[in-house]
Amino acid sequence: MKMVGIVIASHGQFAEGIQQSGSMIFGEQQDVKAVTLKPSEGPDDFRAHVQEAVASLSDPEDVLFLVDLWGGTPFNQINNLLTDHKDKWAIVTGLNLPMLIEAYGARMGETTAQEIASHILEVAKDGVKVKPEELAPKEPASATSPAQAQPVATNGTVGKPGDMDYVLTRIDSRLLHGQVATAWTKSVSPNRIIVVSDAVAKDDLRKNLIQQAAPIGVKAHVVPVDHMIELAKDKEHFGGQRVLLLFENPEDVLRAVEGGVPLKTINVGSMAHSVGKVQPNKVLAFDQTDVDTFKKLKEKGLQFDVRKVPGDGGENMDNILKKAESELQAQKA
Image (cartoon, rainbow, N blue to C red; front, side, top):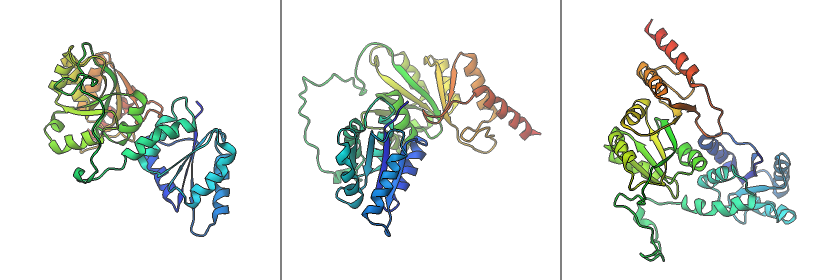
């Protein structure tokens, strides 16, 4: 699939550093180049680096430039090159990590550099926040009248009969973190993220952090397993909700399925290592209970999608479980 090329440009090594950060969150990306202006270089040197980077892209005619500072040398040199590509190229300044991650997600669809540039502006601005919150300037009151507002149930969910649409169910011991809040949210487009965990539901600090980590336009909730079972049975208030479920472990998933949550496929993303567990691949660690639980889930007809991020190739869960079981047996010997 064709993707818009991205050139990240900055004074010093900022561009290289933020590219590395983006890869940690979203995975390695093709057609992304970092270009830096070194202290020993001048404008002509930087311009030559940019031209080299653009020439190396799959489609040099459709390029998005993410630049650190409006009016600085990197911007000025790229802006000079833009003259011959006004219909295709685009520059966005004020480079930050939310901007880069949103650009990565946006280019996964059929789109252009200029469309992405327009799309990522609000995300980049919203990435600038302050703590304590009262230091932030007051937002103007919404112009939407009560009569225009969509009716909302008392639990904060738009009331509508029907079933939830489970767009992704993921096992991830880190729960809601960068890869989920960006890559997976962009891939499956939920309007609700529900963390299902008895332990986290009792921890006000973790609940608060999860709610703050939710991406723009998506609400995050934390509920115990039994409460999730009840929500799944509610046919009055959750119809049409596109829900991304996050579990810490397979045991909670099994409880939910046995309680009636209608799940079909489980994305297995990350299971942290601890004492007594074996690690058959880089991101998954199992004890015997975990292995047995996955077998029970398979017996109930569930499918497994073993991937950290959407762009990864899937791994075979049966092979992973066999390797884990073999390592567990060797551990006992």
